[in-house]
Each structure stands twice: as structure tokens, then as C-alpha cells.
Image 1 (tube, rainbow, N blue to C red):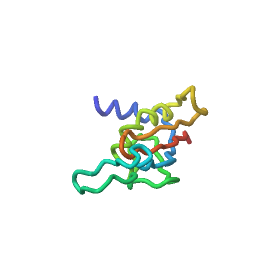
Image 2: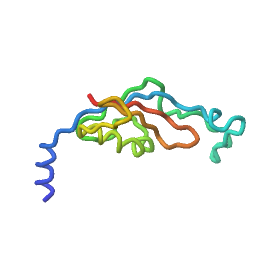
Image 3: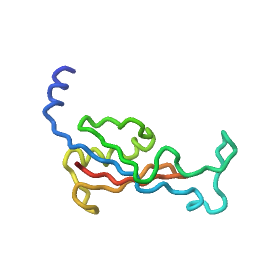
Length: 116
């Protein structure tokens, strides 16, 4: 059974998708002067340190998370990547593109997805 599924998988065309980091939000932009503290360090949270603006990743046609990508953000944006990989579009964005974000409420990151 698994072998036949793998055979079919090779017949399905999935487009590559480029992920571009648009913006990392400073917690002060959300919380003002009352930024929460990290309970493990006691320090105020800072913007996400996993990404930098303009950073790019490519999701190959296998749909696997790119090396070095944050697993939390990946789970959040995977559904949008999948839509683009299979040729779908969103009516509120340019064809072949999507704007999405991770759901870290303290330090979210916005991404642009581009079907390539």
C-alpha cells in the first residue's frame, strides 16, 4: 500500500514556494511599555530572533519545511503554502502570492509567499 502511495505521489505536481520574511514585530508595538517577561530568563521579550527581514527560504515540491525554518511558524503558514503549491490562489491577494504570519502573539512575524 505504502509503495503504491509513493508511486502516485510522484505523479502529483507541486509548485515550489518562496517564503520571504517581511517583518518581525517588536513586542513594544503590541504591549507598549508593559512587554511581558520571559519566565525562563526574567527579561522582556524581544522581537523574533529566528528570522531577519528580507530572509528567503524555498519550499521544494516535496512540501517539507526548509532547513533553518522555525517549526512554530511553519505549522502556522503551512496551509497557505499548500494552497499555492497545488495551484490555488486567494481572492484577496495577487495571483500566486499570499501574505501570512506566525501566531506568536508576543513577537509575530509576517511572511510573503510566492509560487515559483
